[in-house]
Image (cartoon, rainbow over all chains, first blue to last red; front, side):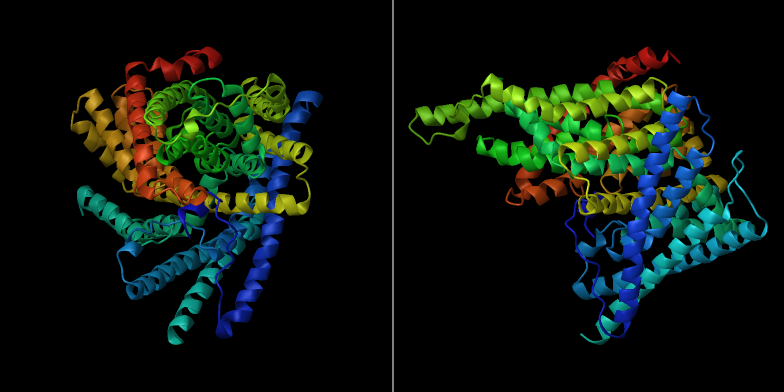
Length: 184
Length: 449
């Protein structure tokens, strides 16, 4: 993905086309991503509205604001982590693409696959550790330290789910690249 | 293993991973995990996710997506074009007024949208064709927009400043205000250059015409009636109100910076709904999707950069790096120059967010020890990172210009941008000589420190 995409300025390019036996898997993931974008959009809007409400209620009604910040944090953290697979489907996580300009197309394909496998390993590890974190928070009924004290397993579950989906998305891209290689 | 070897290994592996083209967030996370595995207690690996979550779940950092939402809402409406058209109308009698209008439009838009590339794109789409139609050379037109766009991260609200305030533990409100003076200095320098260059190109066109050559579009008169000008105003006022409203909410003590972000996003969405009738789900979906894309990409980089700097600090690499710089006993200004040069070089490759989070623990302690004001330095650092945005090889704004005006050769764009890089160097020099340019406004509004 180009640097333009970083700015959200690139015209809508579809996700990579996945051929062959992986196609149903890719369609399923794309469907999940579509709904995540919709829900994530709503979560961001909700966060903006919650914070606006916080200002208004404090100013006009002198209400205390205790839960708003945390609720907004949960909304945004949830949206950001769950959307990471969607961003990956467009190759939207930017990297330094300098090496790619020096390598032959063949070497570049190998580089891209190796990089994806490394990214997958990291994300899979992170997903695993997120699930153990979630489990611990759920079993021990951990809450945040504020007066409102909502349960921590909620954002942890969103993080674990999001990063797991991200790992799946990268695995799919590696799989697609390998099948493309097998059938030139 | 000595701390020096460990540091070199850490730096070397980071560079190697990054240059493979691995996404920056995953590369930083992987380096952190690998070093945790080999050099830190086994239990530390069990808490990495908690670590990342706790660092990220700060309402200050999480205001970033909301600032992006505000920018995307404004950036994807016709606001940029309208703002530009109105400024152009009001400046049309001033010699070189078109160039000035473009610089002003960039500055105002940047202050509303808070993003350099979005500013370039929104103002450039209208501004570059207009300037070229009026005879401005393509490189000059591209340079004005690329440089004008960089004001996006200097004028408040700026995403890079949010990160800097977290990394340097300085007041965000103060930092935002400190950006305004230097921002205006850059606006003045850019506008002054635009006028000078206009007069030069105008004289050349005039001489060619008098010698019997082609009549350049430069020489065409173009005047608008007062009525036309007044009709332009209502289109701009709401956005100026948004800008001022947000600042009043923030500095009038009505809202925290993160609440301001939420409020700004809601106001921006209400404005585009009422003025441009953009309220249907199909109008809003692209805005939300773009916000989600950019936020997710940035927040993952931020989260992993924080994990990375946690490892760096646990292994005493940042402290030793900072101590090493202090022990060189460089003179105060040489130290500053060396650090800014480092930021400049990093800016050629890395986005500002990662530069701030990765380097802050190393470069800020020596600067503090040397007696520099960290808010003032934040402003200098921001200007230097802006140069990275318009400087080859990977200047983001150059790519944006290439996208909106593909027929201008890259060489022309780069040569058009270079004078502005020079002006930014000059601005840094001026702000070093007169730090008050940055510090007087925060001191005035929020009281001296």
